[in-house]
Image 1 (cartoon, helix red, strand yellow):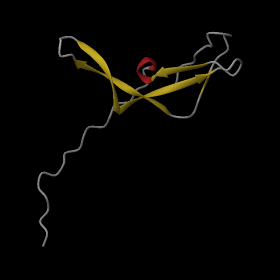
Image 2 (cartoon, one colour):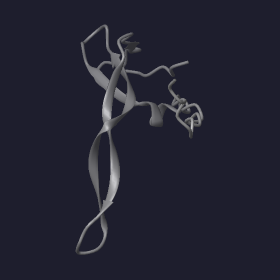
Image 3 (cartoon, helix red, strand yellow):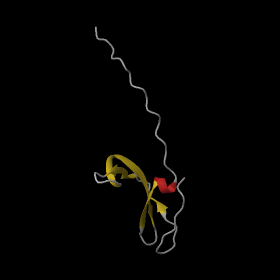
Length: 87
């Protein structure tokens, strides 16, 4: 369930766009001089919900993290440790 959002310009309830969007995630990396910064990780993406105002056309991107609608990944399956022998 996606929570309702009101348009910041006209106050109309925004509609959820049914298309699926994703943004690259940000991962912390350590700097050679010390400290950490954020770097785009294009191998993993975060789902994003797009709201569009039917009255004025304003749109808003909301990450699943902020909406608390993120779904956990299934547990990784164990790979076979031995290859089958060929005859």
